Length: 135
Image (cartoon, rainbow, N blue to C red; front, side, top):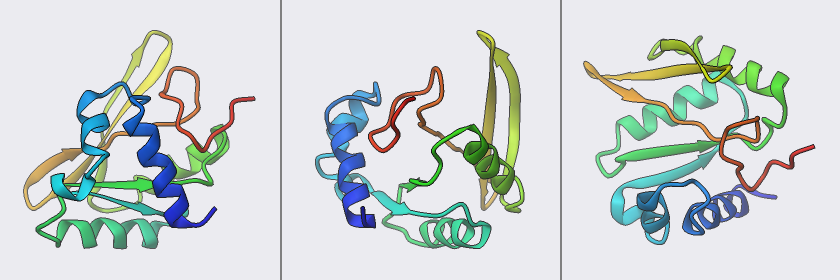
């Protein structure tokens, strides 16, 4: 699947209410209207940093979703999380246990403000995104 198809599939996932968020379901019909933009990335520190900085520097971007279609299992997820903490503007702001699972709160620093990072994946209690097949 190319990046455009991946993004279209992700938007359909939101539009059908699969994220459990009414705003995402509504906004996914016209994401640009709400400043919501999408990108597809490998688990690559430089590529992720470039996408973040591009979004931060663009006044029309309110929310930047980065899709990692190659994160398919626990080892891939661990690689992504270890890559994120190498990015100078990202930190692990919270680390708790919740119902037997780790609850990790990654944060992005933007000009003195802090933004929360949200993730979906096919791992136990997470929302099931369209590009991950549970085994």
